[in-house]
Length: 189
Image (cartoon, rainbow, N blue to C red; front, top):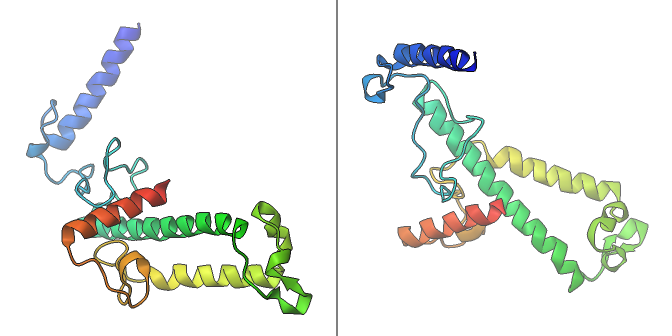
């Protein structure tokens, strides 16, 4: 019985494949307009072993190549941006152990930077107006930074290496690609 069920599923799959490619054996060269055929992003920055290009939910699959490329660029830009934020957050979590800003975090509440505890305990110490400022700043960066994705993720007009405003970029294309690849992978950690 189980072998019969398996054979039924197999023949349905072969019919489906034959309908898409014109061959029950799946020769993709016979059918270039398949809706299942996606743009190949396997040579893009950030594609590294062991996974290679990884898009398990098919966010970049689209019927038009232009939309698929635009979706990929947008998502890669978001990945770089959020990776940078995560790396800065890691530094921000470690730094208060060794350094505190002088002065007041909230002069109206007489709250100095040194009064704010380390780690997650700091969440309750920062006033609501401080959190609103942080959320507002992060939201504005999200909104205004993603309006027109750059040709290469991480490249923004007026920003140089590491996203530093008005700084020089990396001129050597090979070194630049290696640095962006490292930045993307470090942001994934």
